Length: 273
Image (tube, rainbow, N blue to C red):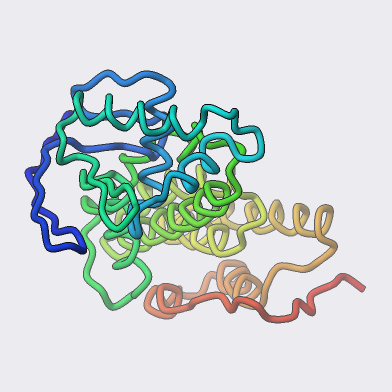
């Protein structure tokens, strides 16, 4: 489904500008309702990447060509921006304080807006809002900038945000009693990231809450084998406690499970003896 947003932004010089195009970079770059060339897609991807501060010509050259920029790179950037302005509207890309600024809304901004809310367990989020945000993900973000270090860093950050959103969606499903829906998204998650213990924890919980105790126990054994083979470690303490609850058929406190946030940046002392 194609969307258009009418937006007004203000440059640092105080000039108000308006545009109606949406640029999508969470997958092959596209502009709603407009065809752009491969060169223009790369340039737009770089503008999305630098959308918060704007990009100098050098920033754009570095993002598009990295260490292999031809002598004509600067002229090529300026020429392609002129063509994009004619095609998308002069207000879509403005030149302000020696930087090119993309004024169009982006799918990245919409994705990040929901992701920011997902960081806080107390922040209300309906499953539909998370589903809509995840649906924006169409492939590899900034794939046109495969050699750019900045794009690689941003891609990893977005992938981490995507994982957080998937897990938050699973939590919302579990809270609403939608155990099968939670299981479905978590199976995809652990398939993509088999070492991510939080996703396994939620998956085992969803299977147990759905009445599939044998499956939940088997999943813990599967995770145990993966961690032993690949990292030579045991499952985390929360996972071992969860497995004990499942093994002894005790009630699972969903509130405690949802509130649990795995520690980060701490020394791992779970090496096998």
